Length: 231
Image (cartoon, rainbow, N blue to C red; front, top):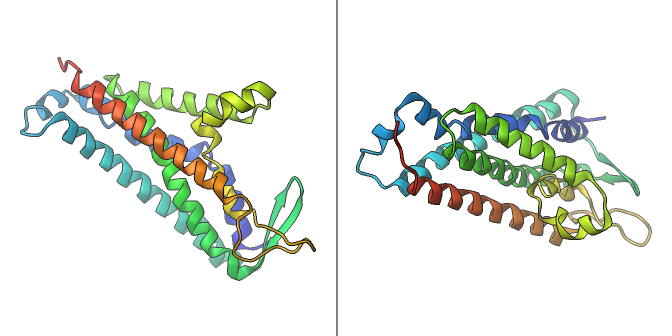
């Protein structure tokens, strides 16, 4: 029991809470302006709607990254300060793996970087839904409903479904950060320092999430450019 293990447990418990905090801001970015009646006034400024949307999304992105950095400081470095550091034990269905103390910290940096992309995907979804609403509650609830339902679908194991739909749900790839803590082992069963068991799968999940971000953001900009702003 040490700070590395405590942080790993904390990260697993924040699967629902973090997307909610992200959705609160991204879902309010456009719908909040419409609700306050300032959206139409903003469109009188000498900027294009595309530029306006990019700036709004950038603000949501900065909030997401700041939230993640805060979580890293509290969860990782706070746990290290309180519980100390040592070799990290990872429980898997195949058994128990032990990662050497010097081989852990970089894995957390990589995992937090991956989590930033995963949370940005949620932010982009909430941002897209925000374009269709004039009250921020709707996009926030809709985003969380989609995340929860898709997460449940991602945990289901159905033969045909596993090979067709499940691999393309963005929630199926949001927890791929765990792959950084699954290490290769030699013939004797000893873990290989600095290794990642299935790096191509982790990179594939990262690529799918990035595609989702561009699709959600592109759709949001396209809809907003054609939107009639009447209030």
